[in-house]
Amino acid sequence: MTGLSSPFSEIWSKCTKKIDLDKINRRSTHTLVEHLGITIDEILPNGLKGSMPVDDRTVQPYRMLHGGASCVLAESLGSIASNIIAIENDMIAVGQGINTQHLRPASEGRVYAIASFIHLGARSHVWNIDIFDENNKIVSTSRLTMAIIKRN
Image 1: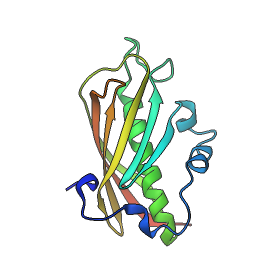
Image 2: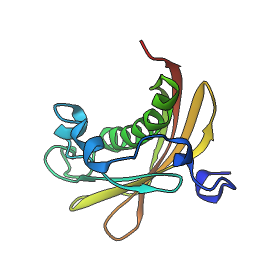
Image 3: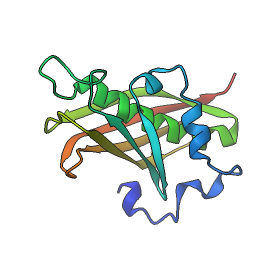
Image 4: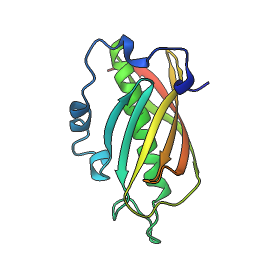
């Protein structure tokens, strides 16, 4: 069962600090996330929505969205979401594994991703991340596992 159909009211309910989109996006300054133009656009009840341009930074030589860029978008959303949750317990989340299926090309505009949780455990989080083009056609789908570790 994914987070979107979960019986939990919302995953953010135990967060003691207000989740601030501007702060989340500023935190990506001088990182790959900023370089690729990835933004976190919306806090959803059970995940995050983000986007990324399909432009010179994110396409392969045939001018289609690079599969690696899709993976970066997916891992970024899941990682940010897990870290919002993990930091509440003085922990951090780090990527452990990602599996992505590329289903359709995107060649212009922006792609939009929705990350929804599948599992939020004490030592691991699992996310489903679907990426869509501007016509709401699915471009790729990913499953991301995050390891939850003690913050140094």
